[in-house]
Amino acid sequence: MKIGIVGSGYVGTTVAACLADFGHDVINVDVDESVVRRLNEGESPISEPGLDDLLDRHAGESLWATTDYEDLATADVVILALPTPANDDGSIDTAYVEAGAESLGAVLPDFESPPTVVVKSTVLPGTTEDVIRPALERESGLRAGEDFSVAVNPEFLREGSAVEDFRNPDKLVFGTADDRALDALEAVYAPLIEDVPVVRTGPREAAMIKYANNAFLATKVSLVNELGNICKEYGVDAYEVADAIGLDDRIGERFLRSGVGWGGSCFPKDLAALVAAARETGYEPALLQAAIDVNDRQPRRMLDLLDDHVDVEGERVAVLGLAFKPGTDDVRNSRAIPIIEGLQERGAEVIAYDPNRGAVDEMRERFPDVEYLASASPTLSGARAALVVTDWPAFADLDLEFDLMSGDVVIDGRRIIERRDGITYEGLTW
Ligand code: UDX
Image 1: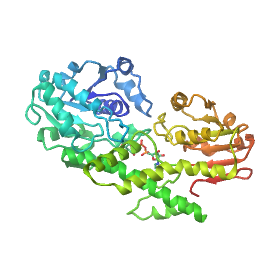
Image 2 (image 1 turned 45 degrees about the vertical axis):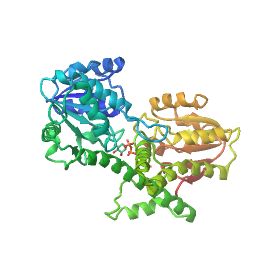
Image 3 (image 1 turned 45 degrees about the horizontal axis):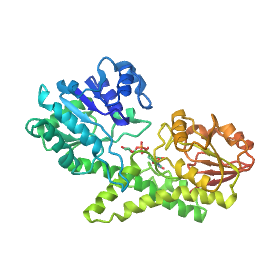
Image 4 (image 1 turned 60 degrees about the horizontal axis):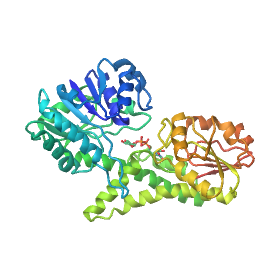
């Protein structure tokens, strides 16, 4: 099957490489010439485990990239994987998906056979019907459902394990009322169909499933954080409580790690968008707003704990971890951002370390006056206090490094540091 993919970000590149690995012929379109050149040379524009290997095997063979939408004309399916970033009011900015749909629409009349356009970008119910489909029809002069098909097929890929998640999904969601689109999606995912639950539903439901999925998970973490905050007040270990409640199948053992909260490119953006969209309808989403509020509060609680022990004005303070979670270079909405801001407001001299060089480079852009060091030892050396923000597994091995500090306060936002003699250890929720 010939598959076109519009957009080469985290999602587009991962999906392109994985579909090429399924045996499809994949063409990736991106407006950025340097991204296209790198992809054709087999080099990933993003850092994701397993991706380099897939590109190495398939780039230039069954996977190639172009800046020219006309190259899509032989495709059976075109997947839109363009970003829907947040506007200032939290709503999604649909300008990129609309522009992509317009560019695709302009070449739709040249397609050899009626294609299926698959919306993989995270969009609200109605975006496909009110923005994307009209753009395709306007530019092509063709009619959806007759001359081409449309489907919504959200992704649930986690950064850091996106390739693995693509190959072993919990579910596939096919949102369309069009049988031709359904057949096309079944062919795209043929190697998975036998073993994976497939949800065949409408496009609006498919769009909502993505938001509901992320809203549920983010709220689950905020709930466990709120319970953890209460546990801490009672001197109770929230992790023991979480392990116990996780034994109840109805709760489930995953996503019960309390701490400094959720970040990344999805949870904060998707919750804000759902809240903004709900308010547009006149419904006030009290629980989702509370989940956001609890998440915003966790870094402040971490800084309050620090204040309880030490005045950091004029002092060196170490921040361990900048990526929003381990295994990624992504610092978008990382909890390290409010932590560094809070430390700078207190007049601290911030020294930071992250095992991922890309995360450091990104954070340096945002906080040029922070000192970034190449490993944990020099970062801790001479620090009055240390704040642990990301649960990189390597941090679990830190031990004697804490003896290099000038003070002894270690605030752990992720339950990754071993409590030991010689440090004043504070867990955020334990
Ligand atoms: C998420 C969703 O999991 C994925 O399905 C979706 O499509 C994109 O958004 P991702 O943002 O890559 O994926 O990360 P995820 O592993 O889900 O973690 C999100 C955030 O929650 C991280 O900041 C993580 O540290 C935090 N988290 C997660 C917790 O604080 N506690 C937990 O128990 C789990």
